[in-house]
Length: 194
Figure (cartoon, rainbow, N blue to C red):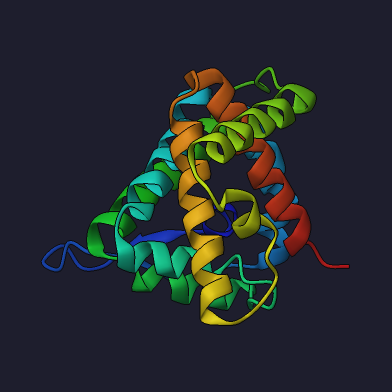
């Protein structure tokens, strides 16, 4: 979920095709990173939650989940080009949901004042969701902490990712949006030039 926010501008192909594709050829990654944090903090909870919902829905599809989970591999390429390629391999419905959610975040984030946000409360929401997932699913913690690149490790990480999203889906929207803001902020920090 984190990197897909940064995939940047989703452009609509010709009207006859009615398909969304990620095209980063005209995007300066440094410019996106410079303004994305502010936009993220100005977008209302409903728009942030729409991105979470797009991610949660995509994670229900085995093919889309596999693509999203590959971004969490410890050795994953998280360059803008790789993120765009991943986004373009999602099914058409997922690409559309992400495109609409990202466009809404961008538009509302430019038009609204900074939203109330407590990173400590967001961390607590994530911890609570993790505890819920751990209590409901054997192997959750193993999957969250595994760093292997073998198929079993990748499958375990992906299952835990899905269980965490399921647990977050059950918390109130304001808490879920705060947790999503936190994950997106941390994802942007990882992509920032060092």
